[in-house]
Image (tube, rainbow, N blue to C red; front, side, top):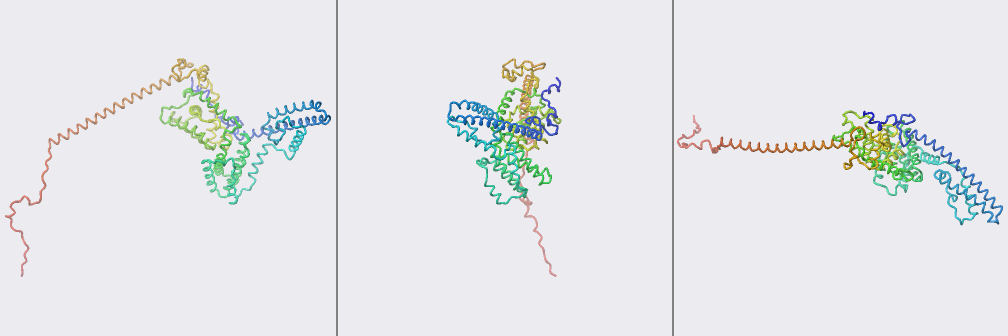
Length: 552
């Protein structure tokens, strides 16, 4: 089987990573293959269409309600003194109420955006009189048609415009100190240590910007407080709010810094860090989504694929090399550590670090730069080995609340797109992708047979036209252990021989020293006390000459 056919199920063309619209940016599986820019355009068009449909439905319900009310009111005014005869006229109205309730159950998330809650939506009690019902419906109609009706998208846009209505100038110290005391109760009731640290770092960073720094801080805090009143929104609506804030802030910074993209990007990184750290608990894996359900499904899927080996994925990595094994461990650690980060940019940094360790492992193994066809299978293998916690929630969190410029271009966007492809591949993994027969794949997935279990002879049979790769791996490991045992014995024998040689050398040196001392004994003479100490005839010497002085 050729190398190309082996990778038939894993190979992904690089053009498939780009946006389906052909804009040149990286796409995302969560955005149906579109980039963040094209996805927002498609989402807004679909949203406007849905709003129009909801308005049409709401107006239809209103007309039917008014017709039913008029019919019921006319029947009651004609025969007010005969309750038994008016009962048949109320029956159609009750059926209409039941039909209307069913319609509103299916459209509850959209109709609530346009109509304020009233007593009409509450279930009617049997003890409520007809006059009370009439008054409630009259009051409801007055509330509906008073003022200008607006869609939920217009409400979000109005809130965001309210944040950016003030001039781009410094606020006074009094306003800053007053603002520091007006915290939102939902986000500052129990501030964590990390939140306080990020807030201090954000303020310290903005001090260097001087004039716009305080205004950026004020705008960011106002946005956080406005988000506290939007807890009932869905994840997509929350994402729209954050992305709109990013766009507005970026546009204002671009005009202030006169087109300096580096400065704008640096400030936006700090803004994203500050905002998302404060909003993390309320927007990560919200209850309105099925992110948690997807996390459990992905985790169960990866556990069911525990039997997949590195040979089945054709991963060009040799973990017997110490440097390669170390890179694999670091890559697994990085992808697991992603869940502990709060800021989308920090989660992307973990993905980028993991990918760089993967490229290093491939480079060391192949002794040449890694290609994209080598990277994706290795990334799939790392995800299978790591089984990262809350993988789907983290991917969705990055998709919804990360600065879109990071996901559209650059290495962060490339690695994140590959991770999404790896997760999608794991969800659709089949026998053909692993070069297995469908029967073996089903047995492995069901747990009836495990390739790593030796007590079942059927698990070690040939798979297809070649030997089961697990058998080859087993024999290879046994050979490695045998060679290690031989090398260990050689090292032990060499150490014992070296110890024997050292002992013999020490004995031989001692013997030679003793022989030399016996052959050439050392004689030490006593030290002389003076030059004439041994001269015994001193008395026979003439007296020493004395100087004489002659007169004359």
